[in-house]
Figure 1 (cartoon, rainbow, N blue to C red):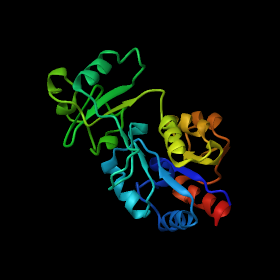
Figure 2: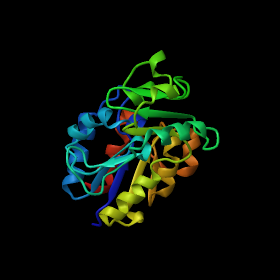
Figure 3: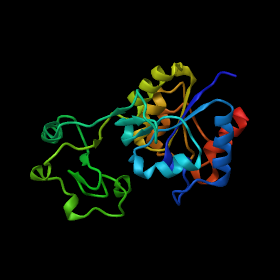
Figure 4: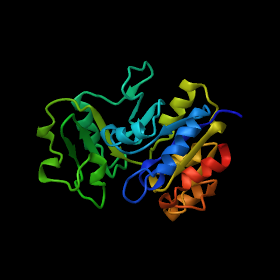
Length: 233
């Protein structure tokens, strides 16, 4: 069987409503990996909020975080790593051009804190930053940017597509052998780009036109794991 790259979103896709991996999902993913398929987490979450799931799944593949801003091999040096670490002037410039690039929000991520242009849970999910609610000190202010951020996180029309294209080239896998799963509007590019893109049963209706097929089960019903079991085990 041709080895596949299987890109999985976390929230609303691989994780259940309690933001946990079911035992069935964990065991299925491990079996898929042992067969030689490359399971890749592609998420908007920061690495610090995805690492535990990566470890639970016992993955050894690269991971995509921040909707494509960080592509890396967790816990190891990797010559192909791509991370958006820039001079502070670029963060300030991007914020100035916020409307031009149609950004819903722009955030500078540092080791212990972050600053976001729109600290509003209706625009950005606080959980993306590892917090339950935004606080006043999270509000972006130019004078707070005294050094370059470790990463810049922004929500625009660009999603995981480009990071996945990069990984396909690095790992020498044809795009037609990329399978992707998602549930929300920020997965549109990823599902469109994949050889086969699948929307969860619980997916946002706006995503359906970008998917090749909608799964019959939700994330709560281990939809991804059941599909993978049927197709590959």
